[in-house]
Length: 88
Image (cartoon, rainbow, N blue to C red; front, side, top):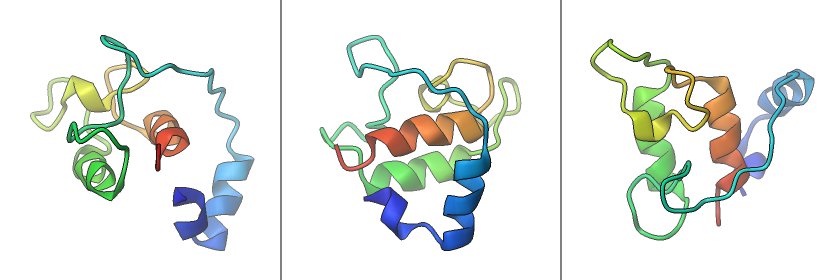
């Protein structure tokens, strides 16, 4: 599990964040954190996500498939949504 790979500090920061995350379903046309399309949300997907983390629409790095909360930037809320699907 991704949570187990995080440092104590990272887990502490994540617990303290007040990010409202509603449940998401991975369906055709909806947010799908299986970025490499292999049928599993795994480490390769994490690497792809990490390469665009912090990107915003219009800056050249932005790709909509990584913007899981559809707010035109790839940020912390997208990471949380990704982490919730990791290993599935």
